[in-house]
Length: 501
Length: 119
Image (tube, rainbow over all chains, first blue to last red; front, top):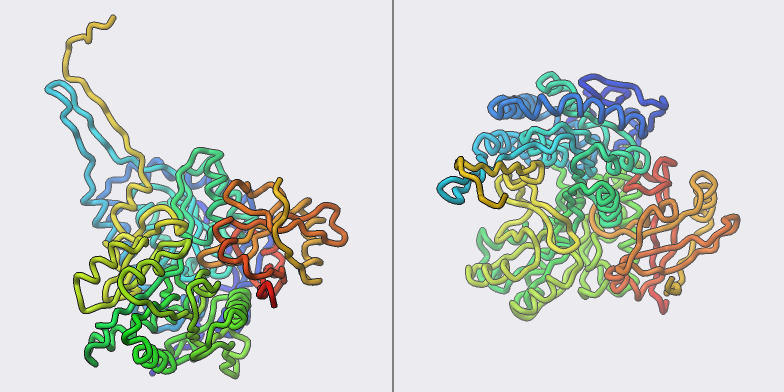
């Protein structure tokens, strides 16, 4: 066991990062940034407004043209160097991220930061390998297709994986040659600045600009600006719709990732043996507690086939009871703090409505008081509800360590329940039968179906939503095209006129 | 304009916040969110900022003491189908963000509390 100390890498105050330097907020206002580990503030952050956004857009527009013309080999090299710099500081980045967000350091050490590092490397490689196309229409006529950067793009980042989610958006945008104005979440605005302190010297001024602040004060002027060529957002449906409305005023594209209510399906044959696979499936069930459940693809609906329902569920309850809740900076801790007080309150409100609707609490169900300095933090016990798919706890993303369990009869019943949701982001299928796995995976209306695994997020596998879960596919080279224009040169090599005039 | 379809209540603390936001920002509206991150939170906007349409349901037009006009509370129709067996109360808790909701900079957050309709 290792218990890390509270990070010392944070400054006491962060301004906006604009044009390669830190700039004070126009109105001179700051807000306190709290660590969910203890509930205490640890720094203050600039409270940005439209004036700051305009200044950042000026800087981005000043940098976009030359960045877009920078050879792809050079852009890729910069992304690789960012990855190298992050790798050199992996441990301090992980500790900083845990302090900011509340998640256990074992996750930031083994997942968040390594994935972010690899993500920069993936897009460094992808942009080198990307080619335009040509079509030979006839002997004299050729259509050339070039990828061009969009220019200046806006990115609004969520608070559940502050550095990784920023990376998912930054890496493809920068690889494709865009300049970026990024707004981190107001709940987790600081870790991106620690990241920036490690890599800022690698980037030309103005290519990455960070404006801090609240959605209504800084996010809105950014998302609604006619000076951005695209808006990328991860969050919830109402704000996603509002961003689309703003974008529609300027005829701008958006990519949106708006969450889900992901089913995790366990067929009878999972319990055919007590072997490694059975053990892996139990871990797959317990993945609802990863990142305290604050994951868009949290497997928050577990569907267990009737034949092994009681036995598998009993084993799953035992596995969940073994989840170690504790200090997020302790490497033995498996579940840390919820990211904010309002998030904690929202989860508690769902524990309440779940009980009112008659769902049965199999374990957990309460706020956790971990004592000492952690008493002020935002901790919830991993919770298993047993109930029916029509209940609200089965239909809404609680964004907490809460799974709702029900049973199913057969494949078609499983698919029916799985698809009975407004969302379609992730799903899990667990079976020893490859035909069942294939049929279920293809029938589930979700952008990602983990098959005999869950919560893996490697670059090179497309991630995005069906239905109300959003638009676009991150984590894959296809995201490059969400940050690019297509230029077609339609060229005639014939000296002869057409003969119309 | 369709008639409101449900009773939505407001705690005294939430009513106080609505009054102060009304004074600062003018007429207000709510749209109940769903999905990720700050999903399932009610979002408060200047009236008309969020364009509702045929895919939305007007749940309630809230009468708040000290607010001259009713404050409309909307939800997507598909989401309401899943919520309609519950009654909603708008409360407010200390918090941080998010979305573009007007109260976030005040260090507080609107929160929905739910009760079974027949309970």
